[in-house]
Length: 236
Image 1 (cartoon, helix red, strand yellow):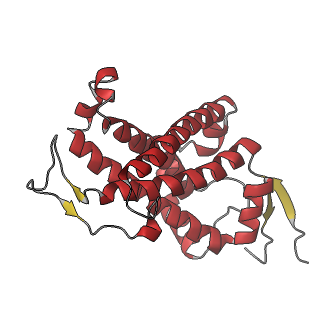
Image 2 (spheres, helix red, strand yellow):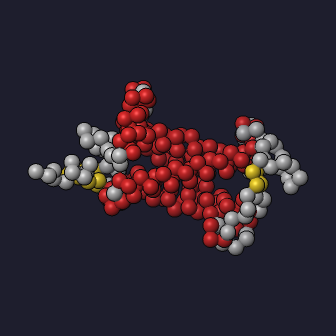
Image 3 (cartoon, one colour):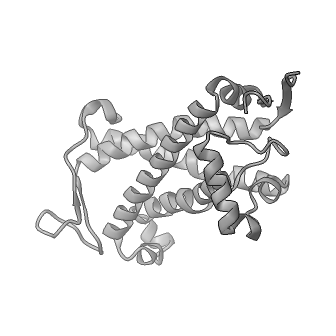
């Protein structure tokens, strides 16, 4: 006899709001950031960077359909970028504080030593390759690869992109004169900012791919309503 579908309340309202706000915010930040990058599409290490300095990365300018605004406007892109950077930074701060207060981080994202063992990692990798993304004994629990990805994004990539962005502003020299030095110079901060953005985009690409493989309707419904249907034994 086939198992009957079972619903689990998986995502609370704050998590769902933060998820969808971030989806919009990151899209705008990436688009406006690419327009800012188009003003000087080269990256350097150190304090200075100019056309005659050796760049470690040179890219062609991004097309208008990828940028915000779609026409060349450095000032316009900076306005978009700075406003939504504030939304990202304060949204992350509030979400982390809320997740610490209600135990979400300690309960769902804490990485235990046994989960990092080679056998555990290999078992989870094989399950992913077989498109089995949920533990039948604890279907709502995050697996180790999800934990590593979410913790890395929450506590490494997003703070890095925020603080490296602050280090790019000369106005921060008066408030936090040490910040630029932490990144090894303003041009190094720009390179770190770009690399962190690229890593976040890679995370989003993997995330969307896994959503499609795991069942987009069920996953999208859970992030809209909070309710997630546990896959039946046949589906698993």
